[in-house]
Structures are given as structure tokens and as C-alpha cells.
Amino acid sequence: MDTGSIAWGITATALVLLMTPGVAFFYGGLVKAKSVISMMMMSFGALGLITVLWILYGFNMSAVTSPADFAGNPFSDFGLTALSQGESGNTDLLGATYGATFAIITIALISGAIADRAKFGSWMIFAGIFATVGYFPIAAWVWGGGWIMNLGTTLFGEDAGIGVIDYAGGTAVHINAGAAALALALVLGKRVGFQKGIQKPHNVPLTLLGASILWFGWFGFNAGAEWLNGLENVGLIVINTLGATAAAIIGWLVIEKFKDGKATSVGAASGAVAGLVAVTPACANLTPGWALLLGVITGAICALAVELKFKLGFDDSLDVVGIHLVGGLVGTLYLGFFATETGLFVGGGFEQLIVQVIAALAVLAYSFVVAFIIGFAIQKTLGFRVKNEDEIAGVDTSVHGEEGYALEVV
Image (tube, rainbow, N blue to C red; front, side):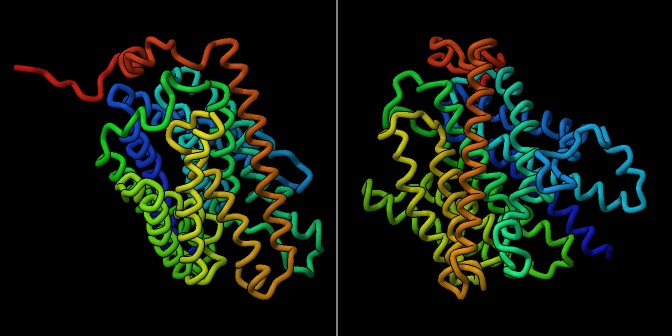
């Protein structure tokens, strides 16, 4: 492989790794000041733990030899010793590192649903178990030769040219994380005094900084895999990543203005993230105009979807469900209608839509059930939620013994 492609692979890996601290900033600004350390630590804890698990056995589980396999053998190359000694070890290890960054951020995203009320140790146990039985197998299904990757051929044959389109993680990352977030929100229950408007972001600039880092890193998230493809579609991917995200900001703010009377900076940041989520599976398979439409639609839908938690009574603290689950569903299903050449409205039939729906709903259901079982078991044994008095006082001091802002009067 040429040195330019390898250099882009390294750069993209670093960009996606930076996205997890970006999530920490984004989430950290949205919680109350006495919980900011707890919130950010869940992202950094995931970064540490999932990296180790991925190198030990997660990478092995993320690829299968047959579509019928649930996941790869975790002990086939424990610690990646054989991979590092192979003839193509240089690029193979780079690919493994790039894959690790996706696993890390998927787990980190879930934490936003349980902000202000989760024990750190219990979160880490959940993160490790869910990554093992949740993310690693799903990555194999979607990208590693599994049943989702082969669904189009299974249903319609090789000649149909149909396959599930999930370029960078609409199902494996966002629907997966969003469904798990919903499950944990139900397991842990509502925050003390939960109702609309009771808790406002303590640091809006921190949230905007996080959103900016996410947008910056997302070019590695979406365009990063092109280092393996000779950068053939990188121009289309980057313009769609920019355009859909920008359009989603507009879509969110318009709804927010009509709904609440004001367009907010947090709304703009949330709209940007929603657009990034939706274009993730679609970035390589839409013309730029259709990507703009996807962004506007997603921004508007997600701006409305974040209100569902008040109507349905689940406490998704930082709108992981409304942004990542809903945004991931919109982006994944949109391809059934507008994917270049195969979408229903651009020359294709119903086949593309059928495989997109099956893949999205299967990942949603599996992730929700697995996360609920793991979270419920932890809650009933070790305890997942902090005491009410610790929640009211702030999780930072009770769980971590630290304060986000130590203000002293001299």
C-alpha cells in the first residue's frame, strides 16, 4: 500500500480517537456542574477499557468466516500476536487500531442516557460486558462478513447487486448505542425531580467545543476507511459529511424556533450531531443534494424526537435516544429510498429498503435486549444507580472525590 494511503489511515485513526474526548466535552457541558467529572470519566473510562479488550480479543470477534457465525473466535489471536508478525502486519495493525476507535466511541455514546446518577464502577462493568456481547458481534455482522453484510445476497441473490449499506456505522454504532442507551435509561429510572426544564446545561461553551471536535473528527469517522480503497470516493464522502451536518443544523433550529420561540446554541450543536449521525451510514451512497435533504429531515425529526422522553416517561438524560437512535434509523432507512442506483426513488426497487429495515430493526432489538439484561443484572447485584442523596449533592465528589470547578475565595 502506498505511503499516502497509510498516512491518511493514521490521521483518520487519530481523528476518530479524538471524537471520544469530544463526546466527553459535549456531554460534560450538558450536565450540572457537580456531575461534569462523572460524565466525562465515563467516556475516558470507556476509552481505556475498550481499547484493552479490543486488542486482547475484540478485534478477533469482529470478523467471521461464515455469515452463519455469531462472532469470531475471541482466542484465535489473543493479543494480536500473529497479526503483528504477519507479512502485512503493518497495515493490518493500522486497520485494527482504526476499528478500535469505533468500538470505543460506540460505548462512550451510551453513557449520556444515564448522566447524573450512575456509579462509575458499575458503568465500567457494563461497558466491558456490552462491548463483548454487543458491539463486537454486531461489528462482525455489519462489516466482518456476518449475516447483515450478506443479507442482500441471501434474500435476492448475487445478481441483484443488493447489500445492506452502512458505510461507517448507522447500525453498528448509532442504532446500537441508542438502543442500549434506552435500555439503561429504563433500568436506572428517572433522575430526582425529572421534568422538562428542571436541569439546564451548566457550560454551553463546553458543549459547543465538544460538538466542534466531533464534527472535526467525523471526517476521519466517515472518510477514514477510504485509505483501504485508494481514496476513490473520498470527495463524495467529505462533501456529504459537511453538507448533511450543516443542513441538519438548519432543520433543528427551524423546528426549535417554531416549537419554543428561540433558536439555541445547544440546539445548533445537537442538530450538527444529529446530521453527522444520519450521514454516517449514507455518506458514500448519496449525491450531495440528497445528502442535504437527509440533513434537513434528520435535524427536524430529531428536534421533535428529543421531546419523546417527557411524553413517554423515560429519562434519557442527554438525548442519546432522540439523536443517535432516531438519527441512525433515519439515515439507515433513507438509503432505501435515495441510495444511488438502488434506492426506491432513484431507479431501484424495494429490495434496498427491505434490507435496510431488517438490519436496522435487528440491531435495535438485539442491542436493547442485551443492554437491558446486563444493566438489570448489575442493578440487582452490585447496584448501578447512586443513592438519591449523592445524586442531589452531585456525583463528582461522592464517586470520584473531585470537583469540576474548585473555586476558592481568597
